[in-house]
Every structure is written in C-alpha cells, then in structure tokens.
Image 1 (tube, rainbow, N blue to C red):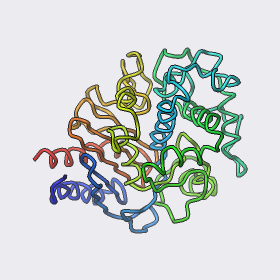
Image 2: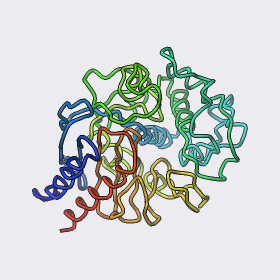
Image 3: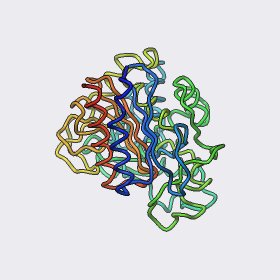
Image 4: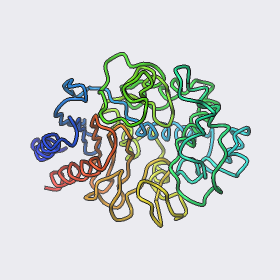
Length: 355
C-alpha cells in the first residue's frame, strides 16, 4: 500500500502546475497493486467549477483501453483471435480487402488513416454512431497492413463494430457488459452523462464552444465513439489500465495480458506524435520500451511501462516493475504541457513509491 504521505509530493507538483497555468486543475488517481486508489484533486475545470474525486471527464482516447479490453475479453471467450483477418468479421469493410487483421487494428498497423474522409459522415447535428460506423467501413487503407504504425481512430471504430457483431448488442451495451460493469467503472458512452462533466479548455477547431463541440456539448458527449466516447472519472480511467496489470486477476487470462503489453508491431517505424524508427505498441496499450520522449507513460517509469492518453487532457499508465498505476486527468486540450504534467507527476509518484 502507498504510504500515507506518499502523495504529498504529487500534490505539490500538481499545485505548481496549476499555479503556472499549465491547466486549471487536475484529478489524479494512483494505486499500488490491488489497493484502492488514492486521489489528489486540485483546482477547477475550464468553467471554474471545482473538481472533485468523482468529477466525470470526457477521456477521449483513453476510451481505446476499454475497447481493447472488450476485444480481449471476447478473445478469451473464444469468439475471436487477434490474428483473425478483418474480413472474417467485417467482410464489407474496405480495409478488409487489404489484408488487415484484428491485431493490425489493435496496434495501429492496419494502414488506415487517423480519421475517415469527412464527406462520408459530415459533422452535423444529426451525426450518430451508426453513420460514423458506415463511414469507417467505407474507409480504405492508406498503405499496406503491417508497414507502419499510424495511429488510427478508424481502426478502433472498426473494432467497435466487431464487438457489436459478435455480441449482438449496441457498442455501449456490450462495453458495459464486457468491461465497465465487471471493473466497476462509473462511466457513460453513447448517452449524455447524467451529471455535469469537466469542461475542457482550449478545444481547437470551428466547432469549439458550439453545440457540436466534441468535448463540451451534449451532442459530443453522447456520440458514443469506440475510439474516444467514454465519460468517466479518474478512478474509472485507472481501473481500465490496471486491468492490463491483472487487477482483478480473473478479468483477463495471464497469457492475454502478456500479449497485450508486448510489442505487436514487428518493429516497424511509427508516425505517432513523435515519429520514430520503432513505435512499440501492444494489443491496445502504447508501450514505453524506448527512451523518452513518450506521451503515454512518464520517463521515470520502467521500460515495461505502458498506457494511453486522450486529446481532452489526460493519461492512464501503469508500470509493472513498480506494480503502480495512475490516471492523470486535466480539463485542458492536449499540448506540450501534458507531457510535462505526465513526467513530473509520474516522477513524484514513483519516487514516493520507492522511498
């Protein structure tokens, strides 16, 4: 268990970040082993509402961890295998014609672009998940599967469709049954949250602050995208990443967890936030492995660390060597400030844990 004073340095770091204007506030959840999470809460959201331990955040691409877990749970149940050709499950998908497998989708090597062509499903008030799903099915690959790591929201939406086909349920219902409820994650996807969510500062684009704002409007919060539509708390984000550490122990088979946190890319180069000669990625989580910079885990973590970040301003990461996991959520759109926040909060957590 973390010592009672272990989070004091984390609080000091977070207070400094808020005082410097890096973000208006933070909610941090951290846990060692299977202990209950401890929290640090400082500041407010972009509208000045005080943050709390249970403040819901639109966690953007941290959602991908939940989608990963749904796919891996179906794999453990024998309903699919990562090496399955996409054509086995979605024969009509344009990407299926190019030889993509589920493994390619999970580790972002399917050759798909980051987003679908917007003319296939324009951002209008009547846009919904079924329309987005059709657009993703119609999106062709930009390059051969297995050639490069290229972060793709399209690929994760295709995985969401696979989950729907195999379970016979709408994605939000399947995600609740497979992942959120078993892990005790308080979250919503595909419906407007029942409580006010943290308002996110600095959202770019022409729709920021309008009824089509993807992070601050009822429309955006209810869109239910498998690639990024989950609304949850810091404890919920923490629970998702801890599942890859084996908490709870019976949630995933050990062999599945080991594969999920092992590089599945074949060592190909990456086109991520920091282009690299290698961009290690597991069956869902981004892997620390290489020397910093790394967006999804702090530089102070061990090379076996892994995690996932979200454009809305947060990250969930885990370090198996320290048996430590954390979620750091802030109500400010992603930018260089987030890398610093991950680095300094992670260093404070790991230093306190090792003291």
